[in-house]
Amino acid sequence: MVEIANAKYSMGCTAASSPVKCQPANYAANDTATIRSLVHLDGPSGRAEYLPLCAKSSFLALLEKNDGLLEEYIRHALVESNGADIVIFIADGEVMETALRAMGKVSAERARIVTAEISKKIRSKADNAIARIGCARVRGVLHWSDVASCPRFQAVFTALEDIMTTGSFENEAIQVDVKTLVKNLFTQRVEKARAAGSALTNVFIGEGLELKPNKRYHKRYNHLERSCLLELSVIISGLTSNIGERFTEMRYLTTDPRGMSFIAECVEHIRRSAVEDLIPTASTIGLKTAAAETHGITFAMPSL
Image 1 (cartoon, rainbow, N blue to C red):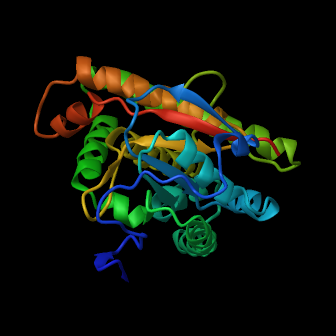
Image 2 (image 1 turned 30 degrees about the horizontal axis):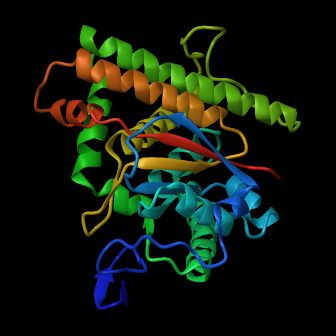
């Protein structure tokens, strides 16, 4: 718990009594030339943004190899977000642990330790960058535990979990969309692993959505499906801080947007199916309500 400006925030943010439209000193839009923003899904302008930082080894390596990239990413967002507040979101905890376990032969405890260690290093870099920038529009840092405790997120995630385990006709479209997403992400992982000289087997058979029969493949699939449901739920519901601030628009730092493009496509399909096809019940109303609100996704692509 950090106390700043007479207000307490468990998210550890540099606070202001009201949103401040600040332009960091000596920083203009043309200074962001090394990062280019590309709108992938259009959302309402002026809404608060979140900047995801994935607690995985490849993302940490990107930040360590390119000193100053994280600070530039935040400054770029401040310029491009039209005066809206932003928050840093470190995607650690279960969403990253389950994704790591999908690679196979990684225990729950090992995944927890590795993710926590990476998260700690990224948090340190984020805190240092925020301090150097010194802008009250940067509302602080959220972790997975902050996001997962939000009732809006929980309602969306519970609905998606139920849909994936219930055989009713109205759920089929979403089930196929999620399974297709998992296959696309697995295939991408296999391609990257093989390009790096590692042997990684896809859990799917051929061109369809049928899984290979071995139990270890089913385990790997289940881990990645759960990770995908968690991430989809965050994007659909948006982030809410412990003081009630909502951040719905994603600006995603990436050198390869393919994975997030797959996720964004799935999000749009789920939104459409939820609004048009799902019968409103106690278990689906949270998803239907959240899906009716469009959230934007923008890629922040550095020239490295």
